[in-house]
Image 1 (tube, rainbow, N blue to C red):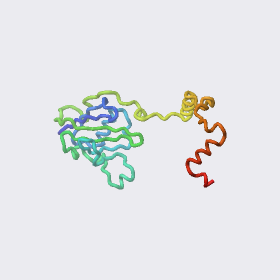
Image 2 (image 1 turned 45 degrees about the vertical axis):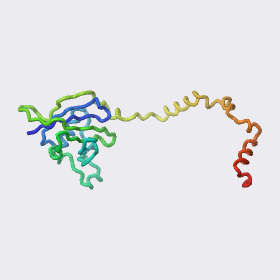
Image 3 (image 1 turned 180 degrees about the vertical axis):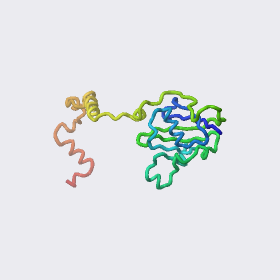
Length: 196
């Protein structure tokens, strides 16, 4: 039996990757589960593989726990599709989106086709490089409290002296020293004085 060695790379963390040996008869669900054995993330989350070209353009979707809309469109299911069905190229690529609620994107590339080694259990982790982000929030910007944001804005205003009336006096035009004169001049220059 052929063994596919895939390199699985976090799209946003290129220095973090795993190389996993998968039997050719494995399903995409087997690969989904094996990826998350190496990351420590929960495997019961809606995710999809996309058959891709060399530019990582998404093609056919192979889903796990798809939405009703995807089911209605007859999306392929991970548990029903063997890896070998979509291996057309010795460097076949799959784009993988894990957890659509707070997604991580992975690039999965076939890097080698090997012969099965007697006595070795598959699937198997061949190589592990870098630490995966500890939590799903690590890949997303933290949402700060509105109170903190308000405090920051207030500090920013006082830093530039916007709340100090005396400093704004230097910006008033000389024409407005006598009340209303500046407005009349502007009205006259715009040609709207007859309308009032």
